[in-house]
Image 1: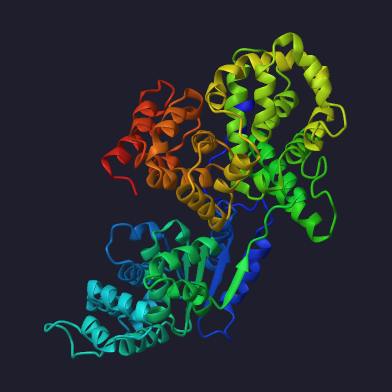
Image 2: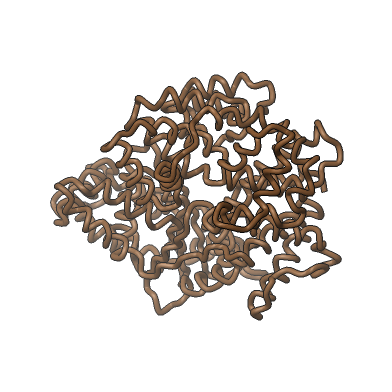
Length: 580
């Protein structure tokens, strides 16, 4: 396998490579359970934990069932709408209409649309009428007031939901709107409408609040079911930001807000060591033999998981795949990574993508570089940057002695470093490849060396800034704002380098927030980011976080001759404000 085959896109998958189908089956069963008149399921996991893939699997299962209408909503549509509540309600109504219009009939039977027409029910017309009858901007204003005061403004709701003079006889607001919507669903001949809401944790606080209010106040009627896929910590934090208007009292309310809306919270499990190995093996098989073979391997792994067989992968499980080499490489990666850095599929993909870029660059200079040696040194560089800097800073004549010292056990050598040095191939036995790797890497770690090594307190601060918990990151930012210290610039520089690591999404959030709250650190972070190695790791999804405080970084990235046209176009759109 060539190293460039290790590049994987970061898009949600429609294939199950991590054993999520069992979760999708359980959630689908709940959504279809007729004992629930209406139900809302919360699908919780950190970013990159597989929520979008799980939603795709749920959607595929539900669409295969008779009597189910599936509507998928992307909260990115709420951006700049001015009214997330109205946008969500409108999108649901439009989605129901679109699904009915294209709903095929079972063999030998009429489609749902034809059945409704034959029975004299103009369901599409009624859906359109309901969508038009609401004055969305008024609903938004009234709903915000109701949420903040916790006392519904019925007079305002009546005004907001009352049709204009040219409409049918007047209705009286929220209660009748819900009744009309319930009656309309009752005409769908026992159809279940399931709304799948993805990426709510990527929305602004007001949009999060608006979406949840729309579900609770307007759409939760018999026949409706919802799945809200989001990082629960982020949702709670967004609700605090949106509702904490009176000195903190609403902050306590925000902690319980989701419990009033979500009847069934479901957390996707984080990857165990065995799960991570199985997922990496499936990715390697996908790169070498295609998606179908990867799916077969993943299915065999799921069977072994269900039977309690560990490890979940074994050689030749599916048509001579996976190979022993693929399994060995996956185990090497998982052993070398800390648990917090390989808990989600996205973390593992990004690790492999970054490795692939480094390996391709090295391969262009050194033929025959063993892939297991490449991975060993990459793990040192990513997981133990301080020791990697020590290796880079050591003269070639002294590196062998340094590596031998790392292989000793004792109080002077951390256990994780000793373990790395002694794992096959032993570090001291590959000194020729170490020298070649270091000679190349020395140019790319200039940025890291420009910052002083972090002491124990600074290292902990950096780890907190890239932690998966939004609460931990917020506390770390608050410390840097409330009690500035001389070492903050070094932490900020290291944070800037972390945007191309496997914790990049959390590093980007902290980087953007830190730039806004500590403008004195912006020059140091900017200088660090305008480094060819850092620029080379920036992808399109990073641009919104970078553009606000670091427009010069976009200019430097666009000027790179190696930037492909897709990324170049994304830079132009971000700069022009046309991207979502």
